[in-house]
Amino acid sequence: MALLCHIIWLAAFGHLVTGNFFNNDPKPNCNEGNLDVQVFSGKHHGLLKLDNNPMKYLVDHLNESLDLESDMPFRAMRAVDRGHYTTWRPYANCITNIGYGAHMLSPFQQAMTLDDLAEELKEGKKVLDIGSGNGYFTALLAWCVGKTGKVIGIEHIPQLVQRATHNVVSGNPEFVKDGRIKFILGDGRKGYAEEAPYDIIHVGGSIEDIPEGLMDQLKPGGVMWFCIGNAKEMLINNRRTESQLAVVKAHKRNATDWDEEFLGRLWRLAALASVEEQKYHFHPNGFYDEWEAFEAQAM
Image (tube, rainbow, N blue to C red; front, side, top):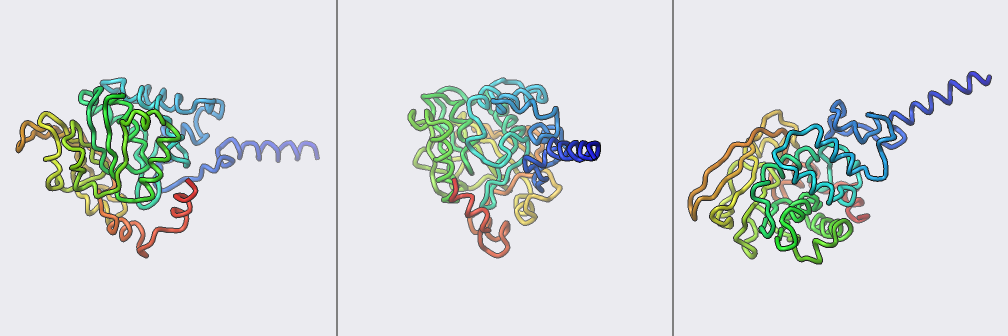
């Protein structure tokens, strides 16, 4: 009898250690076979790695995995803890659903984007972040431009604008006190002319072409980071298309001309869409589902 109880106890303990105790059920927007995803799902290196500073471990893991030209992304991520910006597996290296048809890119993708912009993200720069979502990447940009810089995050979902503001106040209140970060409710495809011109414009969604008038809000000598490709197809298929997007950094030479630098390929980035398009394509019934509405209210 004692042996049987011992066997049952071992089986139960093994079940907990594999991650089910922590509610780490696979999600469709996570690649559970990827080592990076497993780091914080209790499936890699045991549970002892989950110490009092999981963000540090995540950044250290990214530092070991990525060959970036700049260490700025890692320094920014150490200063801006993802745990203040999302409640669902904040330290897993995967795309995270933040509700309302919007997604937060993985730490891997965010680090790569910051590295792409490392030469331009200097103290005192002004940045427009289109599609600011829950505010995490906007906060990373705000850390990069320092106390004398400014970042405008524009988002067309009211609940996400409220959540982003709450998240920054909770996680990095100094950004608000410095006046270096501000969230605006509006159509990011039109930019935000009130604060133009910008040194950098980051477009946080795939596009088929640069929205009309957006390049006019960029300073000569400034840069725009965006992904261009089959945006409509990716929207209709809810990001599940197998096509790739081209990652591009446009360098504005003067008032009318710019050069485009191809940086590589990116899989799966939601299209830069209107509110109605997001409602229709991500929510076939035309309504936000109850879980997402509850999540927004709870935060």
